[in-house]
Image (cartoon, rainbow, N blue to C red; front, side):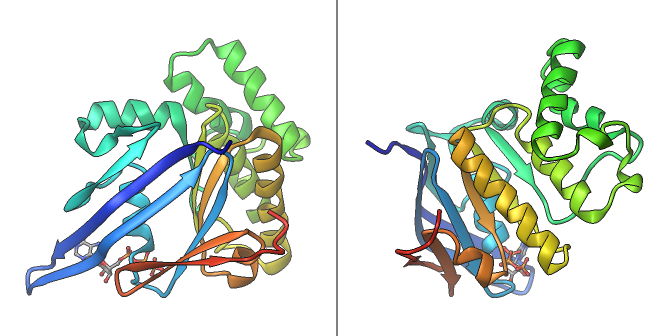
Length: 233
Ligand SMILES: Nc1ncnc2c1ncn2[C@@H]1O[C@H](COP(=O)(O)OP(=O)(O)OP(=O)(O)O)[C@@H](O)[C@H]1O
């Protein structure tokens, strides 16, 4: 039986930009099951980042609830949310956000060190993850010494450091050429299958989105579901 992992219920988001109020999300419902992969697509400015930030507890909805394992995270304090994210959610961004002065191994170990895990354990886990993403030969390289695709693979490895139940990826391939984007995307599909990690992937790339069984399209504040019956994932 599938288990609901994260659920947004009746999410409204209204911004006041000084000249008036803009309703970006209008009574949006969103559910992702454990180990599921979902793409969120939509035109620029349709509210994808806004929805993603609300689902990740990085922003609060004007009204509505976000349930994770049945608990409403919108009611939590900033420090409770930070702890929850650190233990349950991994992030991959369009621009890798790796720390430039640290090498690949140290970047991937960092979330575990921040959690207070022993250095040897954190480095062991980071080494395993970097081997998994095909970068065993790049452990000591700093971000500036890596290619764009390698940097993004380090970012994917880092997102997995805490063994999260959910990875949220915001345009993870947006800065890569087509072939490299496809390779990074395939890596995420494999990790989803191997580790049972759920993924929410925000993307402009309709070709990549169509490889997932479900796409959620944001338009005029509403989500519309597309099901791709014959998609591989
Ligand atoms: N803090 C804010 N204050 C006022 N308006 C905002 C704020 N953040 C976002 N918006 C507006 O909300 C709308 C949705 O923005 P959002 O960044 O969520 O869109 P998006 O779909 O992620 O866009 P893109 O694909 O270009 O990244 C936009 O019109 C934007 O101008």
